[in-house]
Amino acid sequence: MKRRLDHRRSLRYNEDNQGGYAWSITNVIGIVKRGQIFQCILRVEAMKPEITFNHVALEYADKDKADLFFSTILGMEKVKSSTLPDDVSDAIFGIRRSVDMEVYDNGMWRVEVFITGNSKDSGYEHTCIEVKDRKEFMQQCAKYSIEPIAIKMGGKDLLFVRDFSNNLFEIKEKQLSRL
Image 1: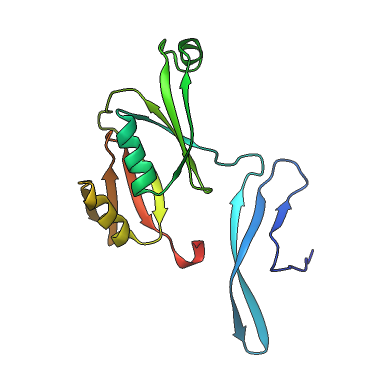
Image 2: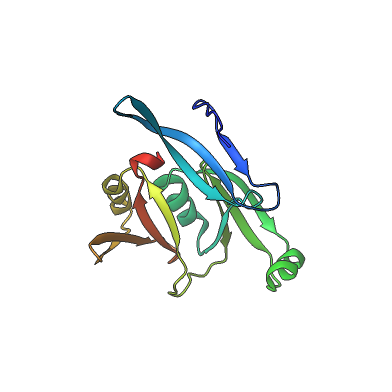
């Protein structure tokens, strides 16, 4: 079945509404002329229509350091400050104590930061973020003594940073097709 695409709008396709994959055409990357035929290059993402990313929750030792990392370095707006009561904390996480929570958002992703007073130990957990310019991002990190973890693997340059509470972030540069 052919569909005419209007490049000014997003198109979603969902197979029979039976929980199949949806195809979301999010933007036109370019138009290429091949002979007498113009081909439209589209950014297409496969997704389950009922699943979307909402937020990441991290533990942080210090509220001021959280503000420094998320607001100053990452440029996210603090949108909420609250305290999770001990009974709610116990019901959700099995931790019977109240905890302060800061919420940061940049319109693309949201981070809930639980101020626990403790830095975490090393592990495999990490959050991957994309930045417009990795060099510019690392200059911003250097201002606040955040050291990069740069690794070469399989011909790729991998870059990670640990924030002030030892949370690990993988840093990727946005590709032109993902801007």
